[in-house]
Length: 334
Length: 238
Image (cartoon, rainbow over all chains, first blue to last red; front, top):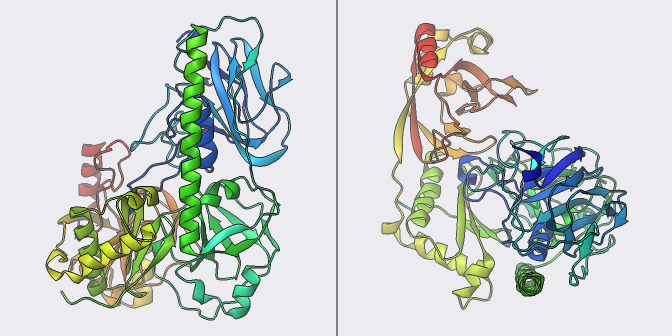
């Protein structure tokens, strides 16, 4: 296919850049994990900002991230980690829609905060593959997303054409709305619910679990974050038969160390599930990187559910507001 | 079917976990599958997916969706009430096997643990093959890998512990770990003691309607085939 028809060319590969969405739902009973984006709060924001449905495919970029050349105009938004994005050497903001001209370069200069940034384009990416109703890249099975793998130099991603032609000379234009990301500070504790095997910990183990002093190990990936800290004491050595686990499940390993399961988690596991990070904090958790410190704080189920419903409501409001603004912009550009 | 004691708690705020203790056995399996099938037949509003395991069942749900159709304080309470209602009603809660699948296995000693197992357990290879093929196994659950079915129970004369260190295992390898038997659907590191290979494909990425040969609640019988039969089978399906 001729280059002109493409929209995004990878001119430099990044560490791990994949197409993701909200993941594969409904196949865990077959041992097929959901996968999908690590930070679905950020993917929902990025998609909302460019007028997409929340399950639209986005790019998940790690640092150092890929560099892209736009070969036709696009409307983009970035959410999640701030890697100092620039277009043709000019800084562009996070959490704000940007109209990008053709023949411009998008690059990421340095990591300011977070672990993964999400790039959404209006209309989504079109030359990608779906497997079991999801385009989330499953690198192990080499399926979904862009050829089932991370992006490489010279890969070409196609996007839908914009509904209006914005003929301008400048490399980009910021649209005049965005989301003020209240965000979360590094010192904020991650809220957790007690897990099915919370009582495997003895009193000292429980107290230690709620102390500051856990650090995310280098041996962490999209499957799970290993934590370094004081090994926790348990009162039982009883072995567990395999049972369901999920995103946010905190497992107690036989040596007393912890692992927090993330997007590529297995569907079941045999280690005690002492706690689970509440869904409303999954985004915050997903933006942690090796070396970051963690502290856990217990809350009750009612509060956790309220937090989640409140977050969902907020995202819905943002989506509706962005869709309105975008329609005004398209109308005015006609 | 008499109900066994169970507990219901959150796995997290979008998933409820029903647990019948911590064991592997036919009775528990019947409880898990009974509830699994009842929920599949009459899904609770907002329910997203079910994950059965040896002695527990996870019910994933969308709290926002559940909240719309309930007066309960939390969506967890609503789901819990619905599940307890099903479990209290014996008529709706009866497990039947979803099917019997016969799986051909080429039992052999080349690059497998069959010989070592025969030595360790002081029984002949033929006897191991006989014991592995003479009974019907229940698919208790899938997990670990896409399409990996945990089946039990093998005769205790061929029950062998897992290896201390996982080793590379080829797709189609049939193994034993404790009282369980299973088949590796894809190449993977693994610690089960391998006794042979099946030419069947346990996981087919290109068949989206049925990516996995086995599902929870199935029953499986193994039968022995020769090297020739194994090769013929493979070339036919290649």
